[in-house]
Length: 476
Image (cartoon, rainbow, N blue to C red; front, side, top):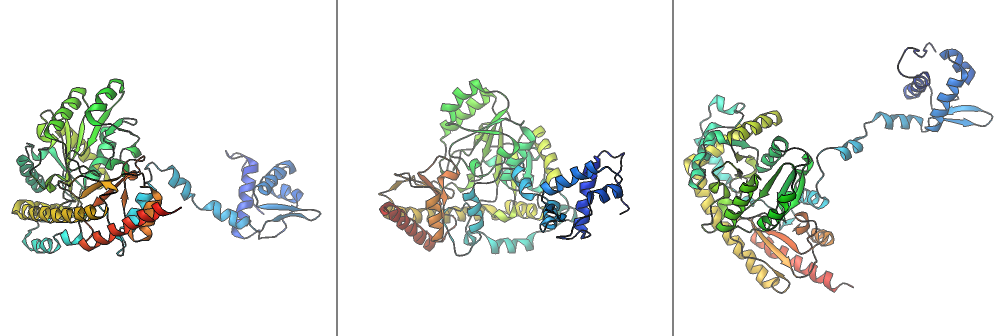
C-alpha cells in the first residue's frame, strides 16, 4: 500500500483509516472472507501506532464489515459489500418522510389510483363524465382560432390579456367589477390556493374553514405550516377571533359547497362578509361551481366586496375541461403582482394554448351555450340519482335535493362510514368518497357525485353499496 492518512486533514486519523478500508472492500481489493493483514503490518504501512489501527478495526467490526475468528485473525464479512452498497444509496425513505409537503390520506391515495381504472364505478368523482365534455366542439373550435406567434410563447406573469379581458367582462355580469390587472391566470383553483399559502401567509397562520371541507382532502396550507381550524361560520368565528393571534384568513365555498352541495343565502353571505371585514380577516371565496346552479342562485360574496377583502377563485375545470388546467384569482393589484411573481418562479405561466382556447370559447359565445346545455344534463342526472336514492336508501339515510353542481351529501342514520366500508365497496368495483376525508371524525356521510358515472353505473353502484351495508349489518 502506498496510501497514508493526512495528518493535517480535518477528519481524524482513525476515521481516514476506516474509510480507506471500506474503499478497499468496495473496489474488491479486499474480497469476502479474505483475511486482512495483521494490525502490526497495517500500522507500519499506514504510518500510525497500533492503538489507532485497533480503534479503526473495532469500529469496522461493530458495523459488520469485519469479523474476528478465534486463533485465525480478522476477516472481511460476507455481508460487507452489501452494507457498503446500501450505505452508498440515498435513503429515499427518510427524504420522503421528512419532506415539507404533507402526504394525503391513504383513502385519497387509493381514490386517485383507482379513478384511473376503466372497470371501476366512480360514485364520488368530482369530475365531469367524458360524455359531458365537449370534445368534438373543442376540436372543431381549434380551426377557428388564429394563433399569434407571440401569444403561444411564455405568457405575461398575469396570463393572457385576451383571456383576462374576457373574464373581466364575464365577472361584470355577476356583479364583480374588476379590470384585467386584478386577474391572475393560474393552472386550476388548487394552484391558486398553493400560491396564496406560500405568498400571503406567515408560518403558523390560522386558516379558518367550514366543516366538512374540501381543504381536508388536499394540503396546500398544512404543508406550508398553516394551522387549520374548522368553525361554524359567524356563530363560532365571532367568539374565536377574540383570542386570535397572528395572521388568518377564511376559506369558503359559499355556492354549491364541496362536499355538501349547500349554498348560502344572501343574508348568510352578507352577515359573514360583514363579520370578516370588521375583524379584518381576509376571505378566499372558491367559486368554481357558480355557473352550475340549476336555479337563479345568489350573487357571489365578491359582488358585495368594495374593500378588496375577498380573494375570488374561479376555474373552467368543472364546466369546460379539467385537462385545460385554467383557473383564475381576482384580487387587489398588489396581491396579484405578488402571486404572479411566485407563479413565474413556479411554472413560468399556465399553458398558452389552453388560455387561447378558453378565451376563444368565452368571446365567441361557445362557452355560454355549452354551460347552458351542461346544467340541463347535470340536472337530469341529479334527478336520476335521487330517484334511485328514494327507492333504495330512504329508510337508512337522508339528503337534500341538489340545487346544482355535482354532489349529493348523503347522511346515514347509523355511523357506518369507515375505511372497512370503503375497502369493501372497492372490492365490488365501486369507488366512494367517504365523509371522513373531508372531516376526520365523520362516520355518517358519503359524497355522491351524479356528474361522472353513467346512468346505468349509478343504478349498479348504488345497488352494490346497499347490499354491502346490509351484509355488514347482518354480520355477527
